Image (cartoon, rainbow, N blue to C red; front, side, top):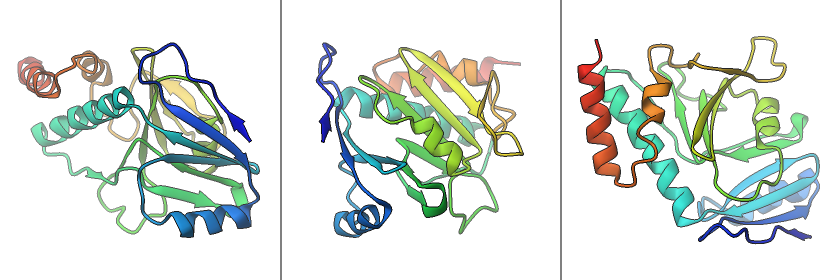
Length: 200
């Protein structure tokens, strides 16, 4: 068992990594049930459990609220599915996003179209690789004050970093990212809405 040490960052995320085969992982999921207290990543026989800090949760919620405010402003039908547990035994991968979304017509899908990840403190398993194996079309990663967009090519090879969203092509991601650092979620959302209305 590997326990990742606490970083100097106040209220850092806590991570524990365990060796675990796929059968044991499936049993763990059954025993854990629908609890969202921890986020998990499974990759090639390793299970990482992450208990998010208050700061981590605040940032992921702020990004989600900003995205949903944009969807409301432009009447975009976007369904939030939270920390949905996505697994694929053939890919030896499983993951839970901080936030995730489905686009219209994707009800009953086996994976979200968009996953949002906040890397707040120490880094463990390669979550982007887990999402690639799970064939999630797009992943946003917020790390050290920067929001990055990774888009999966049609052939399912490695993610390509882009300045714009492929899932939500009319969204100005750079504009949204400007408001993630505002600590008050109310102020962030209201300011973002105002900017959206003022943008020609």
